[in-house]
Structure formats: structure tokens, C-alpha cells
Image (tube, rainbow, N blue to C red; front, side, top):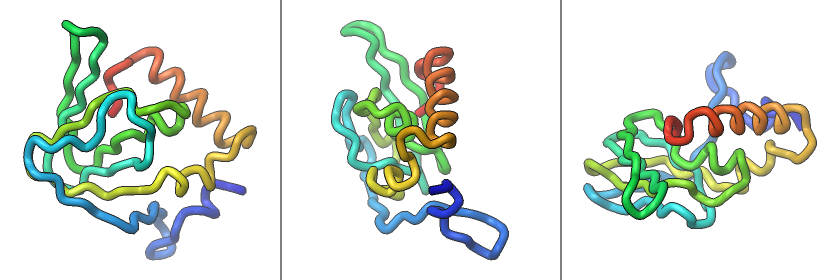
Length: 132
């Protein structure tokens, strides 16, 4: 099945993913922890989220994510648990997209999935904490 078959058409020209749920997170709320199983991919609709990547007990790297940033997408593509901890820096609204929604178009051995995973692995190997 092609990727475009699972996207909704809006205004006959643009594509978007469906999100059936949004959630309000208060300031300093935990969205998910590094090492947890993936249930959702999140999109920041409003607010700020801090991405915390712990390399070891003493060393960690943080980045601030704003409107439009995806959370957990790279981990989902690479079929692993969440690789970072996500906390809200401000009260934030996030769209939640169920993991199974992506599974419908990330079929094993499809050309699109192989290409997407290959690109994700290259990005992940080059810049471990650049993406969210």
C-alpha cells in the first residue's frame, strides 16, 4: 500500500495525518520517559517541550521543541523504544497519533519503508540528539 493512500486529502492539494486526540500538558509535565515503549507519536501544537537525552549518569543533552515538532517519530521509524525523555517547559497542547496508525503505512519490505528507515538511520548515526 502506498503512503499517499493512508493520508487524508485536504483542499485537493495538501495531505495531513489524522489525529483523533489532543492533550493539554501543564508546565513541567512528563510526556514520556527514555526507554518506555512507544504508544504515540506526538506533535507540538502549542507550547514548548524539552527533549532530554541521557548518555550516561553525568552527561545529558537537551533541546527545546516548539510548534510543529514531532516527538517520537524517529524512534517509531527505527522500531525502538523512546530514546529521549520529553518534559513540557510551558503549558503545551499536543496532538496524539497512535502508533498503529503509522504501522498501517510502514509495512516491512515496502520500498517506502526501506528508504525511510535508511534515511532515519543515517540521520540518527550522524546527529544523535539533533532530532526529537
